[in-house]
Image 1 (cartoon, rainbow, N blue to C red):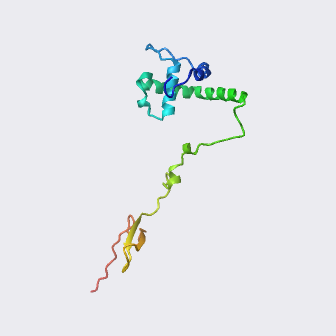
Image 2: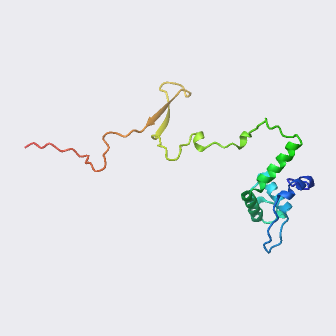
Image 3: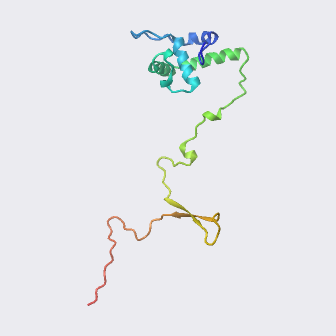
Length: 166
């Protein structure tokens, strides 16, 4: 047995739950080989393109992964394993664990703006050395641009009528 592949005991548990692979005219791969390829990618965290050649083309394995996911094969496997483990007394239903490393926060949680939200005025940060002080004494200034009253509005003229003396 190679790294990340199912043992004979593990395969015996899930074999009846996996669908037979369809015949496409090409040499068929065994369901165990496809399952080993899927688990190799999932356990190693490698991209599909890095799948070892012994599993065949990565596109084939990726296709089986997607079709099995759509058909609910993985849900059936997990459900069957949970039923078996519960019958053997290995599951404590009062205990719940969440792996925090897999919980993703939205971009807005990190300070990014939300889509469609009003953007804040542009700011410029300056750091200046205080007069007559050492190199470590600095001031932090923030300049914010606000629209001025003298800016022209669309359709309005900004020139003032001149006064003529005669």
